[in-house]
Image 1 (cartoon, one colour):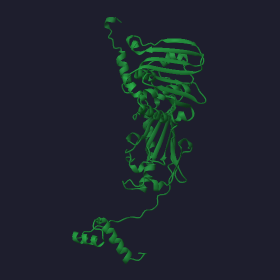
Image 2 (cartoon, rainbow, N blue to C red):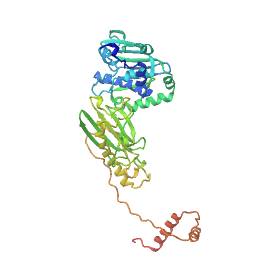
Image 3 (cartoon, rainbow, N blue to C red):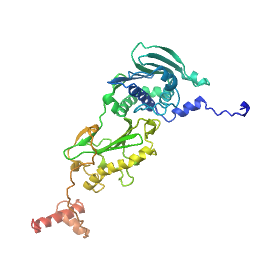
Image 4 (tube, rainbow, N blue to C red):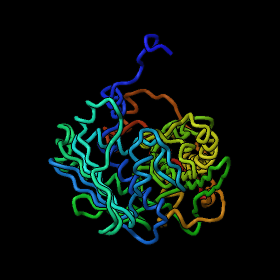
Length: 417
């Protein structure tokens, strides 16, 4: 074709990078890098515990893991490419953009090193200089035989101003550590130890209530390369109720009580404080991570996903098993004792102990007395006089009526009436 007839529609790097990082926050970018380390653990079929260490300061960001390293061929053909999907078993990598997006979000001077036990390589990137070039390639700075064990290390310098401000904040560091603890609960439990600035990320525990009479509902479902496991029931405390949703063992949604997880839709009541001991857990797994109902930042649900729309009715069913019981115990909208009376004393146990499918179990709801309302009018002067006679001129009319009723009942009626 004659070049004079061609129209240039290629994107500029500035536009591409601005679009790439626009909707991801700094914590999301860091978690993308933790995802990569855990993917290395899975990809390399590691057995036993490994480490992921994060160093965060106003001058640099560093993440170093011992999860098996990356081979040179993968680095050349896949790791640094934009949009490559590498679908390993239970992988957390989905769109092939996490590493690059995180680099561009955090800073502009990059040193990437890895050793897989066979070869070591290093890649140095000056993002500002790279943006000036028309081609999209990166270059190896060094390739040599392995010499120092298996690892992957990413160091980012020349941090962006907004990143520096966050990295100087103790609040940001603490919140990041807490988020890592919850997001990677399944991996910290039996695969990796994670530190942030030399402080171990605590192991978060997901629990549900058991007693002699109370047990959670449990359901499994498999379809089209998807395996889902649902657990829902009560919890001894009232902190952060709602649904917790995991995709390939990574926490995506935490303590949700909105329409997104079925509350207030199709027979499920809107969330009310009397339900605040409810906790539900959904685990969705697939060897093809593109099928999972998560967003590109992996911090929310794609509620229009075909997979999620098939699972949501089951979530509603498990939720209503709990809400119907609590509503039968406390039929009014009054926030009474929040299920303590009905469910009794509960003991929290790890959610992964369940194996057999079952419905929510709870003690029978006792029969309650029925009530009638008595209402009548009397002259205000007579009412005030009666209150004065009782020595409580400021008592409510309701209390007056109850006391006069009880007095007549006690004085004029026999015990068996």
